[in-house]
Image: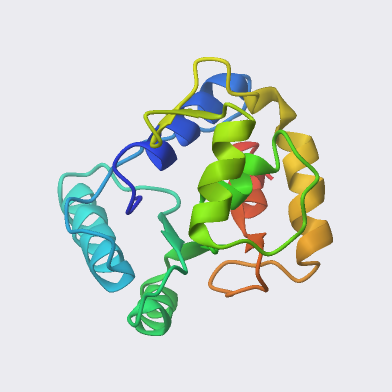
Length: 176
């Protein structure tokens, strides 16, 4: 489940294609509730419960959220932990993870600076859609950079700026 309507689901779908030899089938859902992490988790719980009632339970439920300026993030993380849902937090925002596919930048940036770096590296089109040439194959380099930025990255953890717990999802998708 993602709070983002374009970038995050596109990335996860492309990553799934890149890792297609992996043992898992990934289903990505976006939430039309804005960028409120609490509502993203609530919607994830509803989707999980609906699937279970239909006999189509999920093995893992994961929510991708940004730190941004959210006041509900701590509550979302607590609720998710109680519900058995992993929250993958990117700080400042998801684009940090995307940038690490093309750059070793470990500097803290404002949202605007991060957007400019995304443009400089031509990673997005129309500011929110992955470029057709996005280097998803560089996922291992991005993973190394994420661990260099936050050696303690984990689901539900708000790491330093910049950071992303996306390597957790990558490992899940690889069946590890």
